[in-house]
Length: 128
Image (cartoon, rainbow, N blue to C red; front, side, top):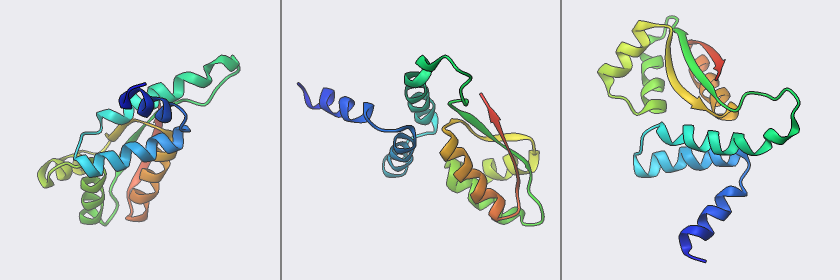
């Protein structure tokens, strides 16, 4: 078994929360974009589908509804979460109703929501 196959097998054994945490750490370490969590959430969400019962959505979009009275703090948190530049993060915050991050696992979406609400933003989680 190659190193890559062994690594993929180990990743396959992770829970969805652990996989989301791994993706977040990889984003930080390697400076990669948010496209990776979509793939991990899709792979992690596909496995438990055998139950047939109504299931909780596998991924969510985090939508910024408003920034309250602490716009600068909200912009800082948006930059931290998305990796956007200052102008792009400012434009996103001021536009309102825009998605901050798409296709993330529930645990990561709730974490992002907590961070943004802590600085006064109004957030909505939309299941996808």
